[in-house]
Length: 266
Image (cartoon, rainbow, N blue to C red; front, side, top):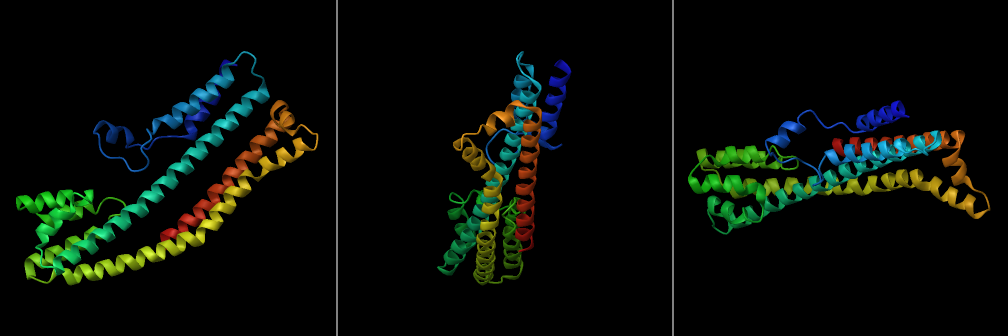
């Protein structure tokens, strides 16, 4: 049982491996993209569940496989949830950048200086704070905007940086360029919304097909059978359950990959 516990623990660690730069970024206290959930909780939680299930004195072979299957499905579900949260944050950041550019353009048309407009928008849009500080101190505003554009979802700030640089050197009107940037960003966001709404049924169908067997188990139990006991208490049943869960996860991941590829092409 000790060997089996170690094997399952190694498998749980393999289900979630942190990226190579995570430790360095964590030690340097750099901002990490994604949901505010400690990355190590998934691996440690899965490890504890598997080790607990395998280390029980009364745990039989089917029960160990069942616990490992549940841990794997939980790890997969958490990973999909994290990706969903990251995708939503990416959309929110892009909308915020487009809104900030539109507001800045409106203030410039009203006669407000670019530096004043930038400083006025910085409290509302955090990604403009470094550029606002540079403008207040007489620093390099385009460089600060280019640095802010490195954040995922804020790529449009690189074009704002170029427009700001041209306006400083050549005296070109910045408001007209910002109007065009806002119009382009609005068109891109509209296209992304259309693509997302078109892919939403495919994502929902994939998830529905993944959980549909659960309703089959409920139907079998309602007809007087006991499919849950067979799937959790016998080797053939628990192996079928593990294979079914693996195929369901593969199906969901496949649909998600196709949807992500379609979103990346827009």
